[in-house]
Amino acid sequence: MAFELPPLPYDYDALEPVISKDTMHFHHDKHHKAYTDKLNEGVEKDSALQGKTIEEILGMISSQPPLIRNNGGGYWNHDFFWKSMKKGGGQPSGALAEAIERDFGGLDSLKEQFNTKGAGQFGSGWAWLIADESGTLKVTSTPNQDNPLMDDAKEPGTPLLGNDVWEHAYYLTYMNDRPGYLKAWWDVVDWDTVGTRYAAVAG
Image (cartoon, rainbow, N blue to C red):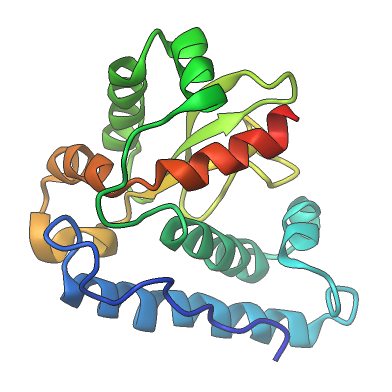
């Protein structure tokens, strides 16, 4: 197997009540596992992909079939998503906080833009906080399992934070209230991890 399902970095109930234990079991053990398994099926069929990292595959995704695009994106996005959260996520600090103030005018404005992008994403997809090639922070969204690392991304950049707005991420708790899920989710954002990601970009 080229890729393995990464374990959650915390217990299934660690993010309650924002994300329920049942949602975590369902989302990680079923959905993330399915993306992993199907990605491996696609890689097994194409020797040119074997031995490549998932980031290398995403960087050439425009030449790949939907099986690789959808499941490669799903594999990377979910691993990134789990690592973006923790109980009592805290607040942005240091250089990240300064960049948020510079590019959004403050955290509340960032949250508003991010929630609007997430709620407005038609169908399934993701909302992102990215740093573009100049280091400027931007809020974007992508359909399905696309992400800003893909070589044909409409708004490319380095992902710093991402939220899954597929219904499987929130439906057991929030039903069809995607805006309610987006608002609650900020309570579990791991700002230390986001800050570390930004530091790697900002240098």
